[in-house]
Image 1 (cartoon, rainbow, N blue to C red):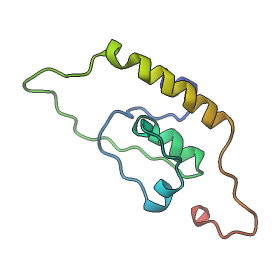
Image 2: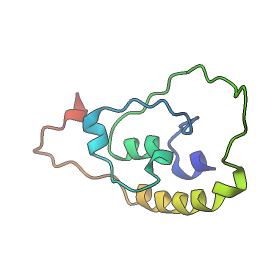
Image 3: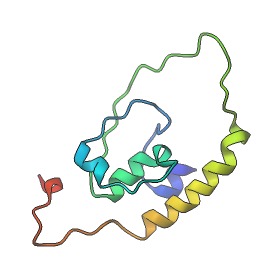
Image 4: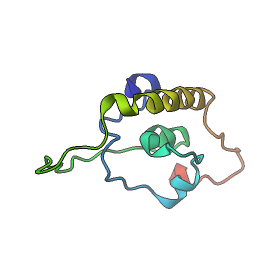
Length: 103
């Protein structure tokens, strides 16, 4: 649902492994649940997103403390906010500025 609404083509935003250039991260708006939407935020700021496969291992013991229904309300509320944020466009880059993303 997140991928359909935000159109960021990210396949696994729940993975904890994320490498982000410092300059790109500084371009992002800060809010409490931004970790759920980092690929969409990065693309909104004009940067490229690349995904690499990682070796996710199955849980060997214990039970997850997060269930689907327990996080659904917060996730949907944040998704509505992200939908609004991404549809209003990126930051805009002045033509006279030497944009580091152009390299």
